[in-house]
Image (cartoon, rainbow, N blue to C red; front, side, top):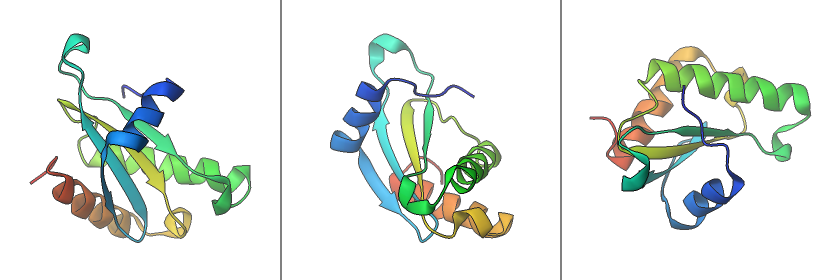
Length: 110
């Protein structure tokens, strides 16, 4: 999975990207820069408010698995996925439903 590694690019997505939220996750999206090509990338964020390193790492694993099941990374768009409280203990079906709802609101998935 192609990931966004640059802090500068993630900051740009936070400032200029479209935002959609669900109780389990928040997603930010922005069209891909034409010079970089058509392939999209994904970044996974779990803040310290969620808990210690073990919980944050689990949240990122859950986000990665959910993104893979939802077909990510999506062509033509860069996406930042942000874990919210409850994601680490949510059932896979609930995570998939959250991904579907958020991606539909952003116009990434139908």
